[in-house]
Length: 100
Image 1 (spheres, helix red, strand yellow):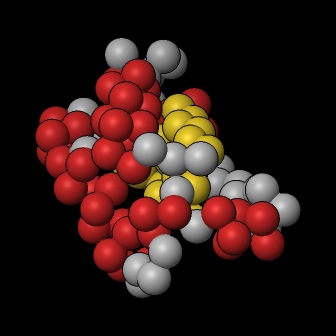
Image 2: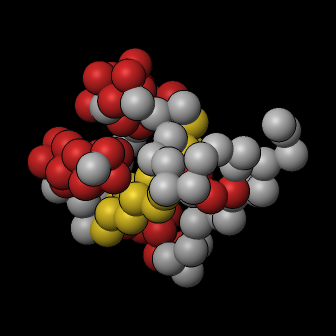
């Protein structure tokens, strides 16, 4: 199961205080039960002092095999513990797919 692989790799790499991986494939024009569109919310002190681009690069590198072979889209939300607290522990919702 791709979602479990994503969760395991992100957990092992970032040791997050909070991790949520959501399969959002149902929001897209794909076969029911697909695992192709995901949202990852990662909260870790590892991101302290890092710009957003560096955080995303680290996530992309961690999931490079899955991105290359299985994942069509990945929404990445990366926060430090302080940023997460300031957001009242809520990441933005993903929009429904408007494409075909």
